[in-house]
Length: 77
Image 1 (tube, rainbow, N blue to C red):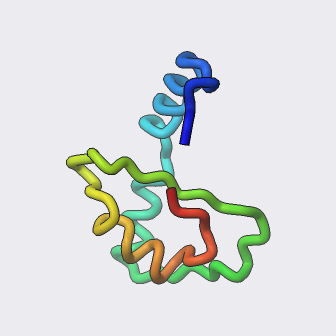
Image 2: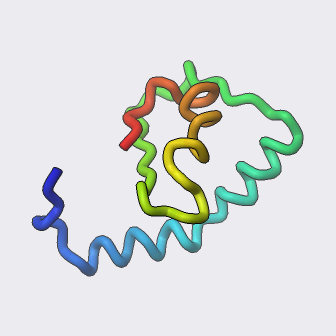
């Protein structure tokens, strides 16, 4: 894959958006309370991106439960 065409300011904007995302506490709460996701109701394409050098959420082990149980139809990158 080649990403040289993506402007650096767009990448920085996306990273800041993820860092400010309020969904992480929601996901943590939902997981702790044993909520389930009805993935069949998700009608739009979903892409989950993981970093191979991420030391906080190592790929693929950190994403395995989401990939296997929540969004198996997603494009996992």
